[in-house]
Amino acid sequence: AFYFICGGNHSHDADYLPEHPAIRNLMRRIHERGHEIGLHPSYGTFQQPELIKQEAERLKRICAEESIDQHVWGGRMHYLRWEQSTTMRAWAGAGMTYDSTLGYADRPGFRCGTCFEYPAFDPVAQEQLNLRIRPLVVMECTVIDAVYLGLGVTDAAEEKIQQLKMSCQQVSGTFGLLWHNSYFKNSNLRNIYKNVLGSQL
Image (cartoon, rainbow, N blue to C red; front, side, top):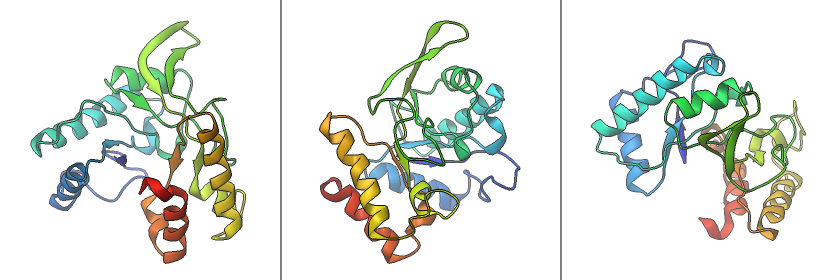
Protein backbone atom coordinates (compact mmCIF):
# COMPACT_ATOMS: atom_id res chain seq x y z
CA ALA A 1 0.00 0.00 0.00
CA PHE A 2 1.06 3.59 -0.61
CA TYR A 3 -0.40 6.28 1.65
CA PHE A 4 -1.03 9.91 0.63
CA ILE A 5 -1.22 13.00 2.83
CA CYS A 6 -4.39 14.90 1.92
CA GLY A 7 -4.31 17.99 4.11
CA GLY A 8 -2.57 19.90 6.85
CA ASN A 9 -0.43 23.01 7.09
CA HIS A 10 2.22 21.92 9.59
CA SER A 11 5.90 21.93 8.63
CA HIS A 12 5.81 18.12 8.99
CA ASP A 13 3.05 17.81 6.40
CA ALA A 14 3.45 17.22 2.68
CA ASP A 15 4.40 19.96 0.25
CA TYR A 16 2.12 18.63 -2.50
CA LEU A 17 -1.58 18.81 -3.23
CA PRO A 18 -3.23 15.44 -3.89
CA GLU A 19 -5.24 17.05 -6.70
CA HIS A 20 -2.08 17.97 -8.63
CA PRO A 21 -1.90 16.18 -12.02
CA ALA A 22 1.44 14.56 -11.14
CA ILE A 23 0.01 13.09 -7.93
CA ARG A 24 -3.14 11.93 -9.71
CA ASN A 25 -0.94 10.24 -12.31
CA LEU A 26 1.07 8.57 -9.54
CA MET A 27 -2.14 7.30 -7.92
CA ARG A 28 -3.30 5.82 -11.23
CA ARG A 29 0.06 4.11 -11.80
CA ILE A 30 0.06 2.64 -8.29
CA HIS A 31 -3.49 1.35 -8.76
CA GLU A 32 -2.75 -0.06 -12.23
CA ARG A 33 0.14 -2.07 -10.75
CA GLY A 34 -2.30 -3.72 -8.36
CA HIS A 35 -1.28 -1.83 -5.24
CA GLU A 36 -3.56 -0.22 -2.70
CA ILE A 37 -3.87 3.51 -2.15
CA GLY A 38 -4.46 4.71 1.39
CA LEU A 39 -4.57 7.73 3.66
CA HIS A 40 -1.75 9.28 5.68
CA PRO A 41 -3.66 11.83 7.80
CA SER A 42 -1.84 15.11 8.34
CA TYR A 43 0.23 15.87 11.44
CA GLY A 44 -2.46 17.59 13.50
CA THR A 45 -5.32 15.16 12.92
CA PHE A 46 -4.75 12.50 15.58
CA GLN A 47 -7.00 14.33 18.07
CA GLN A 48 -9.39 15.73 15.45
CA PRO A 49 -11.79 13.13 14.04
CA GLU A 50 -13.49 15.62 11.72
CA LEU A 51 -10.19 16.40 9.99
CA ILE A 52 -9.45 12.71 9.47
CA LYS A 53 -12.90 12.31 7.95
CA GLN A 54 -12.38 15.33 5.66
CA GLU A 55 -9.01 14.05 4.46
CA ALA A 56 -10.39 10.54 3.89
CA GLU A 57 -13.25 11.98 1.84
CA ARG A 58 -10.80 14.08 -0.16
CA LEU A 59 -8.69 11.03 -1.02
CA LYS A 60 -11.71 8.93 -1.95
CA ARG A 61 -13.09 11.74 -4.14
CA ILE A 62 -9.80 12.09 -6.04
CA CYS A 63 -9.60 8.32 -6.51
CA ALA A 64 -13.18 8.21 -7.80
CA GLU A 65 -12.37 10.99 -10.27
CA GLU A 66 -9.45 8.88 -11.51
CA SER A 67 -11.62 5.72 -11.76
CA ILE A 68 -9.68 4.09 -8.93
CA ASP A 69 -12.09 1.64 -7.33
CA GLN A 70 -11.09 -0.02 -4.05
CA HIS A 71 -13.08 -2.09 -1.58
CA VAL A 72 -10.49 -1.61 1.18
CA TRP A 73 -9.43 1.78 2.53
CA GLY A 74 -6.74 2.05 5.14
CA GLY A 75 -3.66 3.95 6.13
CA ARG A 76 -1.37 5.05 8.90
CA MET A 77 -1.12 8.17 11.05
CA HIS A 78 1.64 10.66 10.24
CA TYR A 79 4.55 10.30 12.69
CA LEU A 80 2.60 7.40 14.23
CA ARG A 81 0.63 9.97 16.28
CA TRP A 82 -2.09 8.19 18.22
CA GLU A 83 -4.48 8.91 21.06
CA GLN A 84 -6.47 5.99 22.38
CA SER A 85 -9.43 5.91 21.81
CA THR A 86 -9.87 9.18 19.88
CA THR A 87 -7.77 8.26 16.85
CA MET A 88 -9.19 4.76 16.56
CA ARG A 89 -12.77 6.02 16.64
CA ALA A 90 -11.85 8.70 14.10
CA TRP A 91 -10.68 6.04 11.63
CA ALA A 92 -13.89 4.09 12.08
CA GLY A 93 -15.97 7.26 11.78
CA ALA A 94 -14.23 8.14 8.52
CA GLY A 95 -15.35 4.84 7.03
CA MET A 96 -11.87 3.39 6.85
CA THR A 97 -11.35 -0.37 6.73
CA TYR A 98 -8.11 -0.61 8.70
CA ASP A 99 -5.35 1.32 10.43
CA SER A 100 -1.67 0.32 10.48
CA THR A 101 -0.24 2.90 12.90
CA LEU A 102 0.34 0.77 15.98
CA GLY A 103 4.06 0.23 16.27
CA TYR A 104 6.75 2.08 18.20
CA ALA A 105 8.93 4.66 16.46
CA ASP A 106 11.89 4.07 18.76
CA ARG A 107 11.91 0.26 18.91
CA PRO A 108 10.97 -2.41 16.38
CA GLY A 109 8.77 -5.27 17.46
CA PHE A 110 5.30 -6.16 18.55
CA ARG A 111 3.58 -3.20 20.19
CA CYS A 112 0.23 -4.95 19.73
CA GLY A 113 1.61 -8.25 21.01
CA THR A 114 0.76 -9.91 17.70
CA CYS A 115 1.48 -9.89 13.97
CA PHE A 116 -2.11 -10.75 13.09
CA GLU A 117 -4.79 -8.29 12.03
CA TYR A 118 -7.51 -7.94 14.68
CA PRO A 119 -10.75 -6.02 15.27
CA ALA A 120 -10.36 -2.61 16.90
CA PHE A 121 -11.77 -2.33 20.40
CA ASP A 122 -12.44 0.92 22.22
CA PRO A 123 -11.49 0.30 25.87
CA VAL A 124 -13.17 3.52 27.02
CA ALA A 125 -16.58 2.83 25.46
CA GLN A 126 -16.11 -0.94 25.90
CA GLU A 127 -17.16 -1.73 22.35
CA GLN A 128 -15.77 -3.24 19.18
CA LEU A 129 -15.42 -0.81 16.29
CA ASN A 130 -16.02 -1.35 12.60
CA LEU A 131 -12.27 -1.17 11.97
CA ARG A 132 -9.37 -3.59 11.72
CA ILE A 133 -5.92 -3.03 13.22
CA ARG A 134 -2.92 -4.14 11.17
CA PRO A 135 0.08 -4.08 13.53
CA LEU A 136 3.22 -2.26 12.45
CA VAL A 137 6.22 -4.46 13.25
CA VAL A 138 9.12 -2.34 12.01
CA MET A 139 9.81 1.03 10.44
CA GLU A 140 13.06 1.33 8.50
CA CYS A 141 14.25 4.50 10.25
CA THR A 142 13.73 2.85 13.65
CA VAL A 143 16.51 0.41 12.81
CA ILE A 144 18.73 2.64 10.66
CA ASP A 145 18.63 6.16 12.12
CA ALA A 146 21.01 7.37 14.83
CA VAL A 147 18.17 8.79 16.95
CA TYR A 148 16.74 5.27 17.37
CA LEU A 149 18.67 1.97 17.15
CA GLY A 150 21.33 3.59 14.98
CA LEU A 151 22.44 0.50 13.06
CA GLY A 152 22.92 2.55 9.90
CA VAL A 153 22.74 1.23 6.37
CA THR A 154 24.49 -2.00 7.33
CA ASP A 155 24.16 -5.77 7.30
CA ALA A 156 23.21 -5.53 10.99
CA ALA A 157 20.21 -3.35 10.12
CA GLU A 158 19.07 -5.79 7.46
CA GLU A 159 19.55 -8.74 9.85
CA LYS A 160 17.41 -7.04 12.51
CA ILE A 161 14.58 -6.51 10.03
CA GLN A 162 14.94 -10.04 8.66
CA GLN A 163 14.72 -11.49 12.20
CA LEU A 164 11.39 -9.76 12.76
CA LYS A 165 10.14 -10.92 9.37
CA MET A 166 11.08 -14.51 10.24
CA SER A 167 9.29 -14.26 13.59
CA CYS A 168 6.11 -13.34 11.73
CA GLN A 169 6.58 -16.09 9.15
CA GLN A 170 7.05 -18.73 11.85
CA VAL A 171 3.47 -18.20 13.00
CA SER A 172 2.06 -17.44 9.51
CA GLY A 173 1.46 -13.85 10.57
CA THR A 174 1.72 -10.61 8.62
CA PHE A 175 5.00 -8.72 8.59
CA GLY A 176 4.01 -5.05 8.93
CA LEU A 177 6.87 -3.08 7.35
CA LEU A 178 6.90 0.71 6.93
CA TRP A 179 9.41 1.87 4.33
CA HIS A 180 9.27 5.58 3.46
CA ASN A 181 9.77 6.62 -0.16
CA SER A 182 12.65 8.87 1.00
CA TYR A 183 14.54 5.70 1.97
CA PHE A 184 14.97 4.69 -1.66
CA LYS A 185 17.43 7.52 -2.25
CA ASN A 186 20.52 5.34 -2.66
CA SER A 187 21.31 1.83 -3.84
CA ASN A 188 22.33 0.52 -0.39
CA LEU A 189 18.94 1.43 1.08
CA ARG A 190 17.15 -0.02 -1.94
CA ASN A 191 19.13 -3.24 -1.62
CA ILE A 192 18.11 -3.71 2.02
CA TYR A 193 14.48 -3.21 1.00
CA LYS A 194 14.76 -5.68 -1.88
CA ASN A 195 16.53 -8.26 0.28
CA VAL A 196 13.90 -7.99 3.02
CA LEU A 197 11.05 -8.43 0.55
CA GLY A 198 12.94 -11.20 -1.25
CA SER A 199 10.55 -13.51 -3.03
CA GLN A 200 7.66 -11.13 -2.33
CA LEU A 201 8.91 -8.71 -5.03
